[in-house]
Length: 109
Image (spheres, helix red, strand yellow):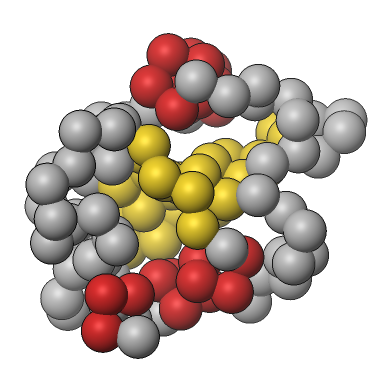
């Protein structure tokens, strides 16, 4: 289980991401897609086209941390999935991220 501070900002990339990307590739997406400073200590969330895999990238003052999860059944539902989305990023609360990782649809909350 992840222990995330309530003050940690969490950004979702709303466009699908190639899950073969590692630290450097995701770092580049934080700058180009999410348009945030990757070294700010925020948490950045990416998912694949099928929405069954998710990666979290986080800078921990002295190095990168990467969390990767694959759902065996179902798919991840981002809060932007059910409405017209023009932005390539979305910010959610840390509590919402924990629900998302459990496979809970945030739109139903």
